[in-house]
Image 1 (cartoon, helix red, strand yellow):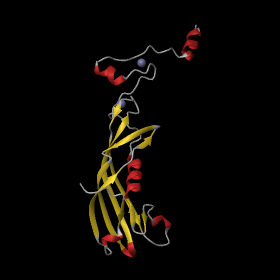
Image 2 (image 1 turned 30 degrees about the vertical axis):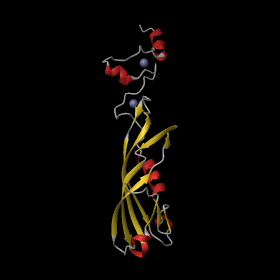
Image 3 (image 1 turned 180 degrees about the vertical axis):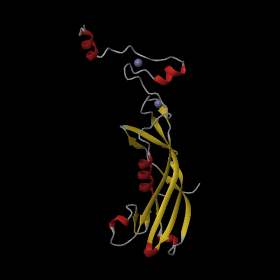
Image 4 (image 1 turned 90 degrees about the horizontal axis):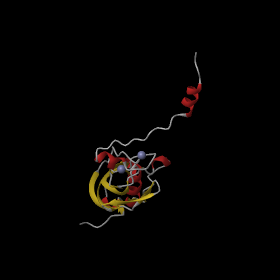
Length: 175
Ligand SMILES: [Zn+2]
Ligand SMILES: [Zn+2]
């Protein structure tokens, strides 16, 4: 297994303008915080595909792709969840006067792969981390796990408190 690459020297490739290279690198990922919970990343070292193209005027166009899973509590039912995330991120680093064209992950032609992978993963996360897409979650009234209730075929319901506005209407008398 190749060594973990946390930073990568792009200049070392000695690409000329218009040239490109595709590399598969092992990138380490740290556990991340989301919604007040800590999610471990599995695997914590992913095989990432890095596409590097040399642009004109000594710039780089970069693309990073990898798949990872997070392991932590489902945000709806709190049971263990392991949602998969696909990351596909692009960066451009074009030296010059235009600040927007500088990548925060490239410094002196050295790519901070670890920081980029961490941020790209965070940006690729779904709005909620769930055990499965259609997780029924917990009952908002009694807190029972509605997935478990559905598994045994039970329909979980509560008597609804009558709306006080309807009670008021009930007191009205119409002739
Ligand atoms: Zn769930
Ligand atoms: Zn309930």
